[in-house]
Length: 126
Image (tube, rainbow, N blue to C red; front, side, top):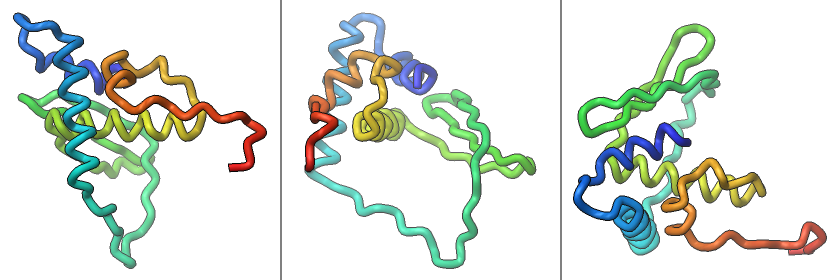
């Protein structure tokens, strides 16, 4: 998570308040995603499951290349622009919150831009 967030943070110009810009851009992304939802990707019926064992992140120009590898040396690569990196951070944060995992790995600008986490009693029925 810190490497993914660092890629976005490097894109901010030096002459403006970094934390403010990062939080505002993250909020804009979340609003855009809410107003223009994208349907989930459906895997083709013939696609064989593939287990990623390691992940490498490589900056390339204005993208972050996400490389996923299995034990046999096969790999899948995804080029992520700034908006896609921000979306990944938002999805990870949502997942962490659902699972009740600690959020401290996320920069403050990601946590503040997202909706507050729901605090439920462990004894709640719903």
